Length: 464
Image (cartoon, rainbow, N blue to C red):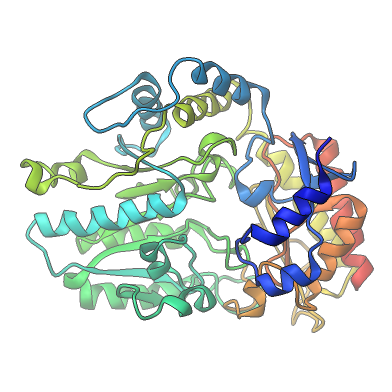
């Protein structure tokens, strides 16, 4: 048993929570105190059990405390917990790199380790800048990203972000990034307007490619923007565009990788190979913070020529043996169990849930689904059209505003009223404003998934 009053008092007095207005937090202060987690379940100090509807910010792709991952961590902890990777190597880091290269898109066989998604992006940004400078194109210093993009928390990653509420406090120090229209479109007709979006990025790159280092994209799904989805055809077109104009393509697979979209990588759905690919979240199945930036021999060769041209960057825990051992076990589970193949059945159940919601609840303005992601956009204003079936990739309503990117819930948004209803029924959801979504573990047992979706339906109906 934990000393619950002490935990609550210490939290209120000392813990600065992420994405949280702390004055409102301290005034309300009713946290969920989690004492144990297993599979898709969170167990609270109160004795309640909650289904984790978002896999704890999308990291627990294999559920909480997967026994094989816990055992891999225990074994490695008895041999080697940490050693620097500069001038040293060790089995977990070396073999993990080999195994990542085997499952990555063809040619991405160089692995640079970091700590999380933000630092994987930061490494990619620095690699892109130095790559061009050392190949005789020092004017290539600008980046292109999408409206509504979210690529992490460091200053470099924030510079790429297209959600104004996250970028605004740091506007005086972020670097130059041009934001172009999202291919997800701005209507609710379920007809993605990616052609118009591509025309915009194509015109920019064709005109200004001599100063553009890289285009950075979340493949197929813009997660933090409200699970905005776009067709793979856009990604293929951008790949061709970048190739023609010597612009690097950086793909952010932090959320979409490790099977979330029904393929091992989101870019697999478009059959494209980026120049750099950033992976995290599912990397260690939610056990430890670790990430990587994958690239090719072509990119690496630009750094040949001694220390003056080397990539002088790295983190204290780069290639940490504990994280690497767990990450290797994650890949072993993916090889030995039908994790990615099982997404199809889970997708079908999510889509069926969306169809039921659209048929019976006018509050549901838009439903979007791809892989093991289901997003239900709510609005008191009914949709313009009412399709008979849920599109697997469709166009949400708009670029997110301040309220729709609020991730705490001290507003009266419909999404957070659904959160409260779901909490009472036994599920933990964390809406993006008025977008209620599910991103459960990919191996969530089907009865548990059915229960989670039933709670979502009941909770939305309760506020309708």
